[in-house]
Length: 120
View (spheres, rainbow, N blue to C red):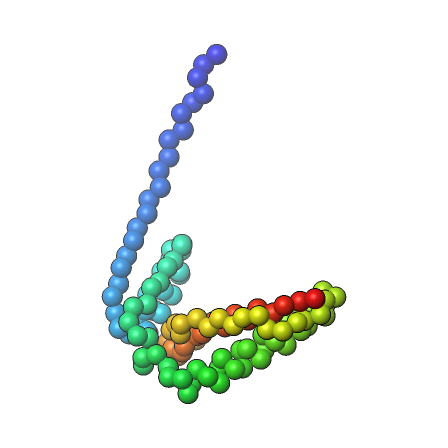
């Protein structure tokens, strides 16, 4: 019996690194790359982000709102699951990260808040 044929193939990979301080330029590069089928596409933002990290007076109301919303969502999920929502077990607040999802000229800060509850 003859040996199975050997299949040969190849994969071409290209990496481009662009350094800029302009969010508008970064968004333009990402739009052009995706238009021409670049996949996967990764972007990394270096530096302090849009105007430097926000101070506590900006973060506190946002974290309060996120924590409150997490409680309402947890209560609804517990009710749907037929369990009783217990006390808050832990709250974790991530470091502020710049987010450019709003497009050119619309940088903002994103903070992830994770709230864990006991259930009964």
